[in-house]
Length: 206
Image (cartoon, rainbow, N blue to C red; front, side, top):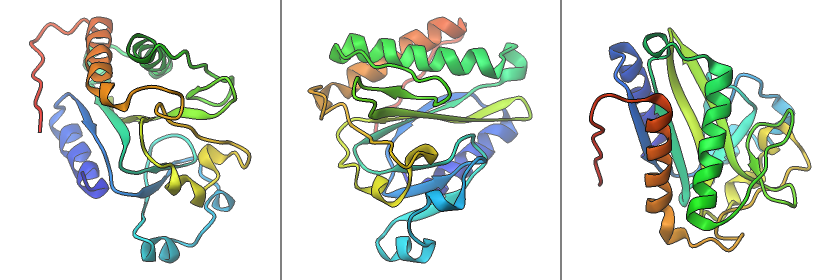
């Protein structure tokens, strides 16, 4: 999905307060969050464009991050007001659900780091990023899980604002990328259980 198309989808979802969990991939794109610092973008935007990399300034939390084919985006659109959700506890729950699903699917245990949201391997390499945007009581954006992407787009930034931060993928850690569907199923089951959805969940595959 083109990143600008996702942004339009998010705004329509928020306007209609239509909840969904969206799984997709993007062509190479760098996004700049609300806490982004200019020095963490290592190339000019026009230079990125010449290399086929889009750039978007957006309203989620965090600094710069990168998306590319092979990375799984998990966008969570929920009516916080209707569900009585609070950002802090929900943020922590999302990370826990993602980590538990990674253990179940790939038998890989990832760690959190104080003050640096996400999931990391034992060498401190970041495997999963998280950034949420809650406006008018409705959430957008979510998680980015490196599964079998080549990580090349990350060379143009200091990921999440850290000059020495390295990134890794599930494939590099020995996980089978073909099991991504099983991870999605595990993630959905855990999230639905955590939210106590009463309505039937509709799954669409393309």
